[in-house]
Image 1 (cartoon, rainbow, N blue to C red):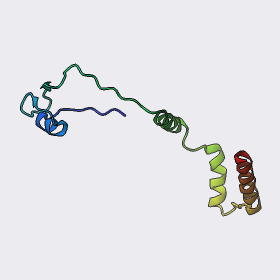
Image 2 (cartoon, rainbow, N blue to C red; image 1 turned 90 degrees about the horizontal axis):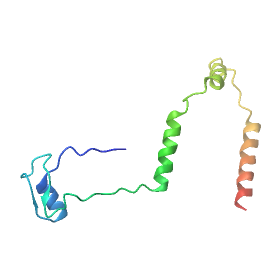
Image 3 (cartoon, rainbow, N blue to C red; image 1 turned 30 degrees about the horizontal axis):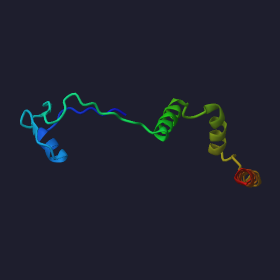
Image 4 (spheres, rainbow, N blue to C red; image 1 turned 180 degrees about the horizontal axis):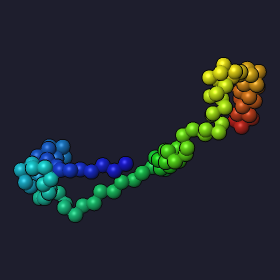
Amino acid sequence: MVTKIKGSDVNRLGRITGRRLSGAKGRAGSRISGSVNANRRDDVVVSPLSRTINLADEVAHAAPGIREAIVAPIREAIANGEYKVDSVAVADKILRQVLMDRKKVM
């Protein structure tokens, strides 16, 4: 995410930083000079977690939203009132996953 700063109010910056700044009397887009080093460079460090989240976001947006080949038959069965959920199979899969997760922890 990139944010552009279109201008700055020198007087406001002076109040925030506690420094006396000279410049173009608070006009937007004015350059700061005086006690502030005009050649100073700010660095930004992005955490590994932030990079991972950004990568996950990019992958999610690149992936197709709906896999029509899988969804279409289910959607049709629901519309026709023919879709049945096998509650025993669902419970079985949930319990298997819980047991697998417990094995990983132990």
